[in-house]
Length: 187
Image (cartoon, rainbow, N blue to C red; front, side, top):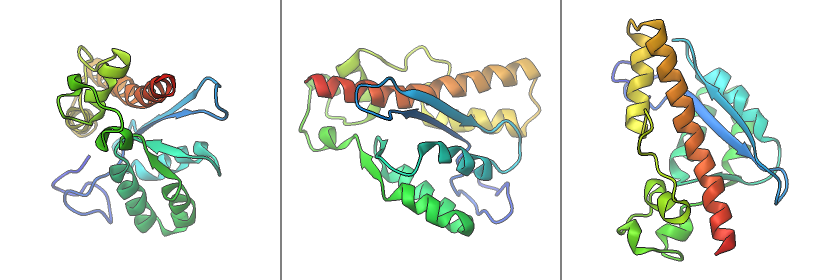
C-alpha cells in the first residue's frame, strides 16, 4: 500500500508499505514447490513481520520475481528503514533474477501477448490461466481493499472475505511464475 497520509512512524507520504507476500519455494529442480505466505491482519506496521516471513527463503538460491525492479526497491527500502536487518535483506536483494526478461527481450513472444510482456499477458499464453473471475484481479485493487478492511470500519465477514481474496490473488502471482517457468522449460 502507498497511503497519502503516512500510517506508521518513520514512513512518508506515498511510501510503498508491503503488507503481503507469497513464496513458492523449490529446493531442488523437479521438486514440488512449497507455498508459504504472509498477510498482515491488523492495522499495525506489517513490515517487521513481513521481514521475518522472508527468512523462509533461506540463505542460498535464486529469488525469482516477475519485473523484479519493484521487489528489489521494496527490499532496499526495508533495509534502509530497518538497519538491523540490512545484511539479511540486501543478501536477498543480490540474489534476484527476473522471469520477465525472456518476454521483455522477445526471446519468447506470442502474438496473443499483444505486445505486452506483463505477467497477466504472458500467463494465459503459456498456461491458459488468467486472473479473470477472481475477486481481486490486480495489484491496485489489492492495495485498496487491504487498506479498506484494515483502516475503515468493516463487517467481520466482509473483512474475512477480502483477506481470503488477497491470499488467493497473491498466491496466484507466485504460482503463475512456477507455471511459466515450467512451460518455458518444456518449450
